[in-house]
Length: 201
Length: 201
Image (tube, rainbow over all chains, first blue to last red; front, side, top):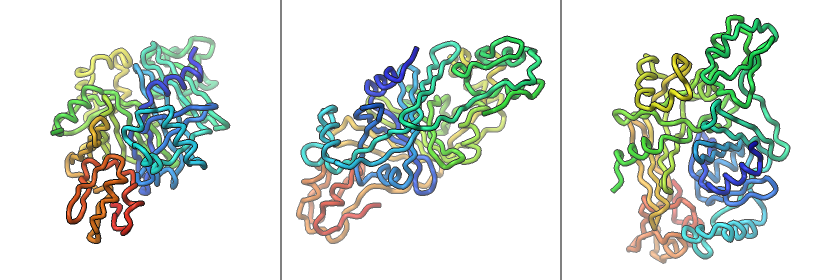
């Protein structure tokens, strides 16, 4: 069973992750920003004060981080905040990630600013399992919003949802049910249920 | 010299790219969405009608796509639009990407909708070169917004910008100049120029 710790290990192992932000026009922006440090379930990274991404996070702290390895993705959605004690965190991250000295040698490292994501939703998604598998974890005190589809009380157990599901995920019973951890969220059962009894969360 | 064609080859080779969108609350969202087809410099992908990303693109068509391979990233920023003739495009993409049949077998493929990005900015970024290298391409008739830092007319050729640049990028001369393709956008020259003569674009 996948654990938070497994996710953190993948994040530290891959390092290269895509950080998505929203710019001053309300549009999405993305770039590679390595995850430099993980401590007490908090995600640390850094970026230059001259970069657009720096201003974007200051103006709109909600970010989405995505890491992929062997068709398994981990997504972290939460707020990033700039850390005090810039020198401490920059030195710690440079110590842990020596390659940074090639890009920012000597004193030039202090053009960077450290950031932390503390309260976030972390979702693991594995496309290699059949059916697919997803699991959501809470970091800090983030609120998790349930997503996906659920079968309502008026189920007549016709089995159509299971038949049309690309992964045959719904489970048979007096009333059918959708195991949330296996749902693609494609919406086919929602469209095909003859009772219109499937609700989108 | 890196070309558009090289970028398209990387995109088709990697396939797994991160698509970033903006949700109904104006926050960034991201997930892996494979790039399924490239034709006439247009990027094609597909997603399920039940997924949040489908609604997000319909409501806010500006997206950012990011692909990474061997520390070289390609970012595509532009508008995505839903294609007419769903069946034609879905069948074409399933034909080109046979693995899709494992996830969406048989008729279930038609829960997907095809999308295209036609007018976009495409940026290649290579962190393995020293100094780093970036190059921007135009897809369709997108407007490219120049970014980064330029040295103004009041340059006294003191050389401080070159000295403080992590990659020693500014080029010496009667007036110094910053080769845009090698700039990290970190902002250190901007902060350290004694004449405050460096402008952020």
